[in-house]
Image (tube, rainbow, N blue to C red; front, side, top):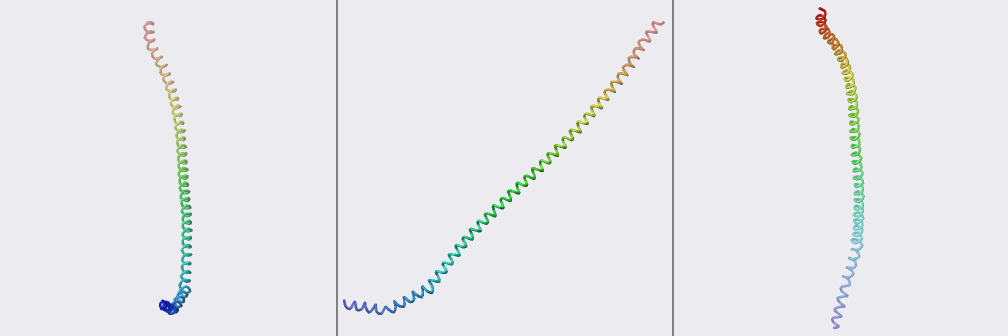
Length: 153
């Protein structure tokens, strides 16, 4: 067993330079590669988070612009509807005025036509009255003349 321990001790002793080499390589890796790798990963993480935050800000800005656009569209539509309604109201008022004017003119025409008709009726009645008187006189004359000539004989 002594030999085994001696061989094991020999092996350990001969592996010391390899262990030192491994420790040097590990230390060099930590100093050269691992530290730089950690810096790059941290920078990458910061950039990724920054890009995510920037994307969130852009999305928020786009949503605000969209809301502003939609508000502007609603206002424009409301303004168009108001303009159309005002135009419609003006048109209806103009139609009402034209209709009232036409009714007024028609009323005036009807009144003047009635007055003319009344005047013509009165004139016709007067003419008929005169004709009736003259016809009555003519009838009386024609009836009385023969009777006077028969009685006066």
